[in-house]
Image (cartoon, rainbow, N blue to C red; front, side, top):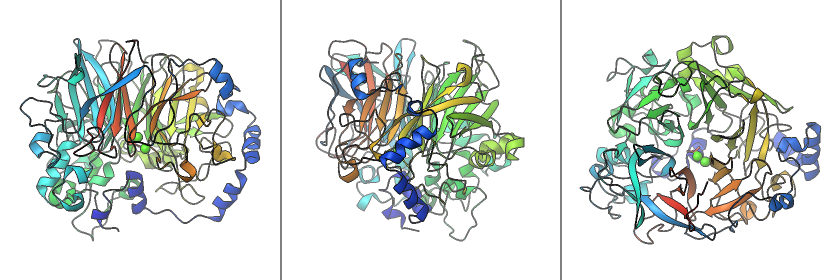
Length: 628
Ligand code: FEO
Ligand code: CA
Ligand code: CA
């Protein structure tokens, strides 16, 4: 195992890779690579019998798409600098940076110290990610995730940002989690409303209620909580969702990285291996906070990896861990309703070779009705994508998994393996169209898919030919779209195709050039964040390789693009500073401002001095019209 102090700077994906290294390239992969000539690619489509339908573009070419553009902006070129760029006629400003005070008695952010535990508990958190805006009694209240830590900036007093003390751990725990805050637009633009009664921080130590099938299960009981119903903290808050009853869904993704063991000789409990929970955590929590020490608290990791529901209208409300939505590395939680009105939540598990899920509630949503158990009682399904463009949602129940409802919600990955879902290329955000019966999932990339390596459960690799994961070495990613049978998100059948397969036609002339709606003018890789606006346009954010070299030449910095669901046209709207991931998007209630998250920027963005600070920006149209 590599020394923890050397691994804090890795991406979570690379960190996982260290825990569970993939085999070297296999003969099988070489055969697959050879098959990926342009000709092989095209004949593969024909073999599916649905040709253009596999790519869902209705035969549109980029030239056709341009003549019928629905986009009210002039697309922008790639950038490689440390700044933000938006189209002509649009402007941006910073709304909130890591460390900005939510209350007037909090000292201004000090880049030399990165603040204190006390200041972080009452300031905008680190590494902004998914977000949703709620109008609460006429006030604009935004809830924003803070995914992980950047210890170089967070703990600048320590060489290389090493975590050396209980105080260091407490500070890191305080600057992650969620911020809820009121914002308002004044003469100087958008700003935090300091001291608003809505302002709160939710951290790694905030008390929450555990609800749903796993609540009270023996595997969730600890010495501090013998009931198994009261957890502390929410972890690695990545993507989001929102319910029609006005609550915020925050998703615990790489929760495994916070746990470790002070005793290297312990036997890890069942299931830890599948979730990547090992003997060394990323931030040394286990050395200074016994709750994260598996040797002392082996059940604590069973209390993380869930979707958490937060009421942004009440700063004193207790967040609820909704175990009914399963325990996976949750990316986001995309809400829909069945034809009969049952809540549906689509859920991606972001790890190589893991699955796409959906939850269908037993209850029906009635405006103004009781919503407290709607996300607790229901059925969880895993997606199976067939090579003929059909698909099925497989119920995770006793018959298909051999587990009872509680265990399905604790060992969800194993349940999905037993039921026979399709292993995917890292499912990131799901988005549901508000205007058409369709949904999308970003499959960001999968650099290590090989014949004998899919996931930690050893599940069969998805076929390349005719699969939603059509490349054995997938460096660029793709977006799969599905149509629920009968236009009903409650249906257990669907049809699917790829909306786009990202690639680089500047350097490849095979399958790695991407699908027909990828061209020299809209290059991108690793689609990740995604929202669909009220017009049905698809806003796509990237978290990829921004080296602008070799296979990524011409792709520039991470970015946000807009896709037309009908023509397939995709155009670039925004570029982020080099080093950053563009992630998180929501709108003001009047839709005249789009809020966009810029995570872990490089350079000294946005201030030009001090330290780089993850920030949320507000983008507006100069003519004051709506933006999405
Ligand atoms: Fe937090 Fe999979 O992104
Ligand atoms: Ca993501
Ligand atoms: Ca990502």
